Image (tube, rainbow over the protein chains, first blue to last red):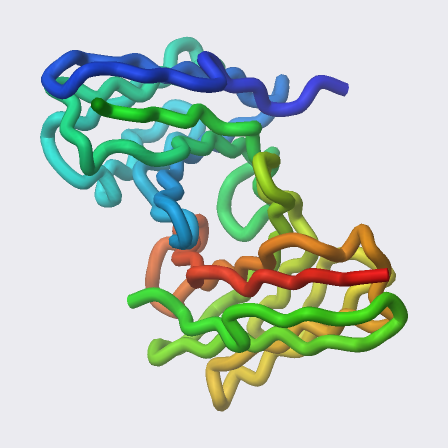
Length: 114
Length: 112
């Protein structure tokens, strides 16, 4: 079946612009995660959605970052007024039920802020 | 705090064995292992749970020492396809059971 998809695969933007990154999870997966991966670093947790519960936003680095998940499926990560330090690969993952469960990752969006 | 992985990098010849370690300063509930090839998404390998339960691939083995808060991933008779960066992700006891904190990764290169 189809895996997790993300778009765009690459995004180059100018400092100060807003960007939107999209994630389509595996159909039927109730849990969705966003991570950030900077060069040479591990994956940094950003936000977690589970069903209709309030998301866990504890990993968002600043109030410039926000995310939503519409209809329990597609998610959008928005970064406002981008800064150069926001440059990274943004990875989305989904899992069947959340909790201690296998996470299936998408290919990521490489964001470059000039 | 991130778990600490060691070694940072290892180079093997095909057929050799390797051990990758993951250590935490906090009590662990579970340890998750993923492999990421360059430019690709991380791929699940294994979950080890407090109490000894494991879920994962048949050809990869791992251990979880709850007392030492450590996990080790054992790669035996390595193949070229094993090359990639291995990440451990930890779930801390008493924390949210979905929140993984990942180490910086171990780069494994398998040469012919």
